[in-house]
Length: 193
Image 1 (cartoon, rainbow, N blue to C red):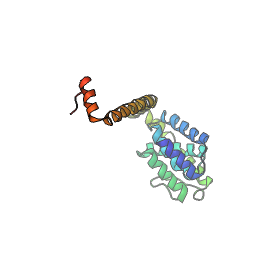
Image 2: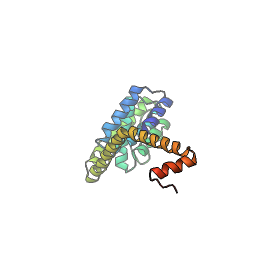
Image 3: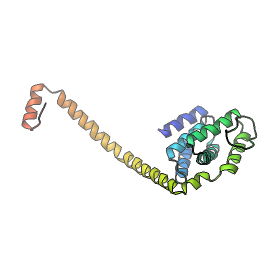
Image 4: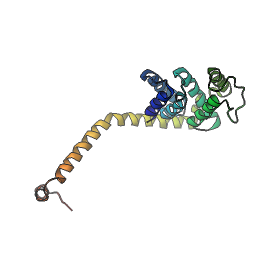
């Protein structure tokens, strides 16, 4: 789901390539291994920036800044990304954050000023949060979720094939003449209610 949303966001922002999408998703996975945020959350936060045309490098910097701001303020990473993006696109200050941001709304100068200012103010907060006991437990939960997601993606095709086969068998049986259904049920000890 997050991957599809990222692709759509990148297309809307005019920055989509399969390689760029993969680079952002790889970054999300790497960042999830050093912060409390799941890779899907990080990918969703990244999509906030690509929608407005941020390239891979810019998106990675802005996403790291979002993780640090989120950790510092105790909010979700996507909420932090929305705050940063609002400041980037409109020129507004980030409420409750005291820093001098240079550059016009939407400019590369403003982007760099935001990333540098947030890094100076909050840099390292996401990794520090991950190093706490609660952070470690959250990371364990995220990692466990990733394992189950992987297992699910591996067995899903087999489960889907069985479900289709059972559905086809059931539909075949239900489409039989009712007398044949009763005969089949009687001979095979199936009770029909």
